[in-house]
Image (cartoon, rainbow, N blue to C red; front, side):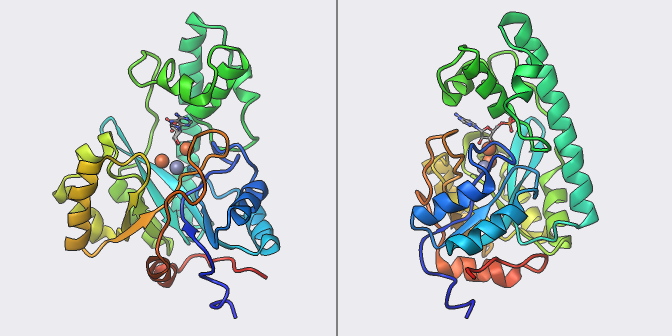
Length: 290
Ligand code: AMP
Ligand code: FE
Ligand code: FE
Ligand code: ZN
């Protein structure tokens, strides 16, 4: 019965709720995904699984398949690399410890960035905290929302293009593990790892064949090659490497509600790839419509 209910519409494997930097609660997000006509949606908040249970209840009610997931922050030198992780055990000790470490580092980093921005602009840490969800993952989007609230930018995107840009003098990185460690942790927790938007400028630059091969050896499942921020040239190169290493290719929206222009279902993943992904997921189950 569950199988019949699985692939009844487009599949979008990358979305964010207010548990991280999306603007909708997990339930609102799942309902928006069903309303957009999707058959399957993955919730992939940054460094947190706190939205899974609410999203599961909403998915059953809305009649849409939910793939529980997360976007794991990792880093190589100065380059931030996002690793999508699906169907892993959310209580796995390794994942719990690593994501708690990252969330704490994100908080300290945001506070330090805000202190420096506040020296030049009307912005306090309290302004930023007012834009966050209790216990949620904090990032630059919340600083952007505070800048908008204070009249210092018109939209999140404008804040990212200005004060929050890595080049603007206020940017600061935060702790994140090497992607190799994250891939290993995700597989150890029964999960399925996919590199998010791998053909974006910074990520593609550090994704040499040797690094990709090492990630494949550690258990990498796929590359999110259909994503609006991927660059054509890097996409072509990585598509060839995906074939060579038998990596799955996924596509998704990276929806953040009103926080980004990305729309649900604007890029999708094939049922065949989702089938493979579900087949390899051992730490959590997809949530099928009731
Ligand atoms: P951080 O991880 O705190 O450095 O912030 C980066 C996050 O901000 C990513 O998850 C993006 O999805 C989000 N982001 C990047 N650019 C924009 C933008 N123009 N508008 C809204 N959110 C953005
Ligand atoms: Fe985000
Ligand atoms: Fe990302
Ligand atoms: Zn994302």
